[in-house]
Image (cartoon, rainbow over all chains, first blue to last red; front, side):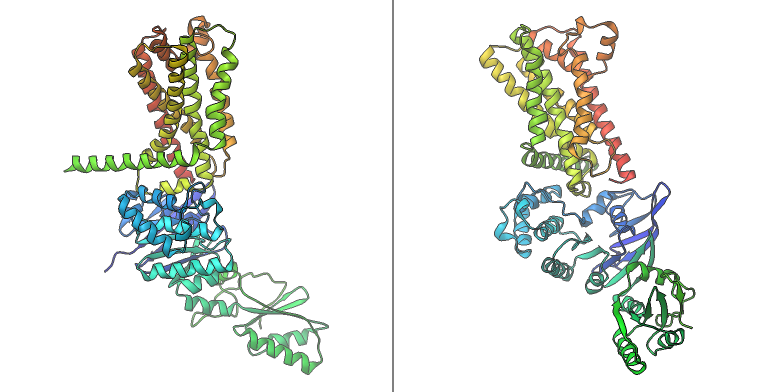
Length: 334
Length: 258
């Protein structure tokens, strides 16, 4: 059996009374793109900082390709490269100088370092500007330099912390392509993000973390199914009676409803079909729709759903036990 | 076999420390705070306190050497480390397979070279234009290097005080200057030790600058108040203490989180 790329065991980090990461355990297999998904402040970066030995865990440990981060941090560090959320490059140096400095940190012989630096800068489309100071580069280009620096020692595992945060669509697409390319070349990728669509499009498995606790580790397909259950259509209809409201809640595609002020939120796995049903209902009963919008679940909602469940919503064969508070004044499908 | 492994590891650590120092030279030597606090300020202070005092050339050079090694070398750490931590480039070194002491040694080497370089240049100019001759040029250069190393480690110690990564250079440099400035007055630089009151003199022995000044007096003027060997030993001790304290601060920081 191959050694796991990452084996985290009850990783815990406490700051005063705050448990920033609370007994997190998971395994990342070699060759995976493993997504670590959670809202801002969920504990993603703290976990990465512990895994990359910048921060000492309060409790628990992890092994990187078999090297314990507490007992053999030196061995563990040889296995990975890290790209933090902020591109940590030297703006006063050129892309070329940045890469060569990184190579020296890993004692790569000069000739080999030059070959690798050229290859990486060409791969990242920066070779034409390799002698320019990084301070004239765009955010996306700086991010590419930061990633290239982290790859100069050809690590087996790459930590990417919010790699596309603050980037425009074009740069985001380019970084996604790079991640896929690196993974195809054999690099295991541990990617933290707060964007569900990014995790879904890139990752082979996704862990969801919130408030320091891990909710689930699953495939994007299963997560997508969960998300579908949490989609909603919010509708505002003038002069809606209680009986009419109940009729809307009983629409075939609606699994749960919540009153949100003057609007009615209808949870549905098929928002398009629900909209059709709503329009039909309004047409048949002479009602005027004042507002209508579809809602995608927030990560917070997904996490609450996965940990506590939402009344009336089930995923696959899993029955959901308790009502989760998504904010309600009145509601719940009867 | 184990000895060979240890030697290979030491060579590796030394090479990485050198790479860090070389990178710092490229990135920070022309940074405005380095020029301001490391180059202009020591000379400004020297001329402010020395002009019209009728000092002999040798005495002037001994004092100037103390000021430049002290102020210039100890300015590098409070400039470099906060900048590295703010841009998170410091983390790049922390996640590399290298010991913390090597990273810090690399950072300290920059201050040492900066301080020693400015001081040796001063010495050369004094030799050419003022005709000042050292009792032992080799020992004097060694003393400049040792003092610069100790003061650079002091600067790194200031910069390593556990704070948040967003601390700006000024927030480190100002307290560091507030500590360094009074040291100049109790270390025999502006007021010779023999003219100090007993309580002030007792305090002066706590300052590393006292030993550097006295050592420069020995090596430039041929006379000092304390045995030269004591000055050498004290500077080495301060160097070790500052580095040990710096490492301890970083260990605390790693526990708390950078």
